[in-house]
Length: 140
Image 1 (spheres, rainbow, N blue to C red):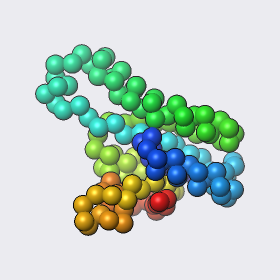
Image 2: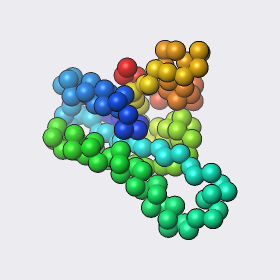
Image 3: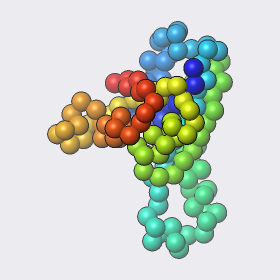
């Protein structure tokens, strides 16, 4: 199964990884994981005055902060994973990558906070569910 896992380095990402580690059916060679970090875009006015190389390095550093401990986790589990870094609005980018990459499942942690209407799930999770045609497994 081809699984997309959006990650942001939060405690909810760690909880989702703990769920993976505790359930043998998710580990092993039967699944192929792609970890996706979506960095928010620098506002257009600020980006316009920054050197493109500096901006690109900023985005790469932000993603690597999230990916570094995850590399360690998956290395210990002896699971090969792919890492993808994107820039843009989180929910729209996640749903777009899931669709274009023809993933079988999207597995994500949920913050469980936001406005009154988002008491059960975080607003990004709610938006991903609304936009995504790929089945979603939410770990809380």
